[in-house]
Length: 165
Image 1 (tube, rainbow, N blue to C red):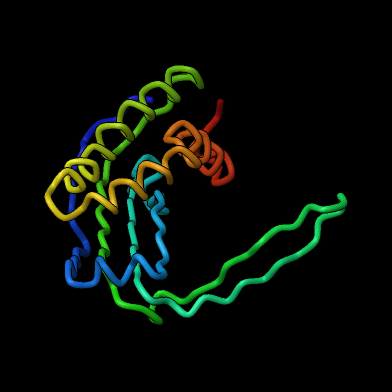
Image 2: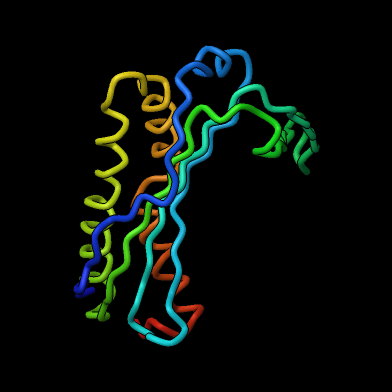
């Protein structure tokens, strides 16, 4: 995937309340994810977004559901972000244009771009005070590696008829 006309990273939201870090020890909600938007007017315009939320003292609601197999259950935890104290909220994005070049080449170049884009977040987490957040983010990426995000992006491009390979 040829990636070009890369705009600078824009920080859309940044909130850090260090005084709530200890509150996060007793109960917290951590969520980070990539999101992406495609321009309807310009079929080769793409916006990648990274959003991180770390909230203390949420009102959690657990739901435990049995699976088909014996002794197996799923646990669903639900919470609203507005219920707790914001420890960290960070959202940033970047817009670029792209041209498909073939599946293997596209996966490689999109992965390289995503790695550089994500480096912005890792540099933020290297600052003093973010040790706990950095640990949580490392766990999140173990469960949702960048490679999966690349394939999700390509699947979404296909679903929007913006990818032919």
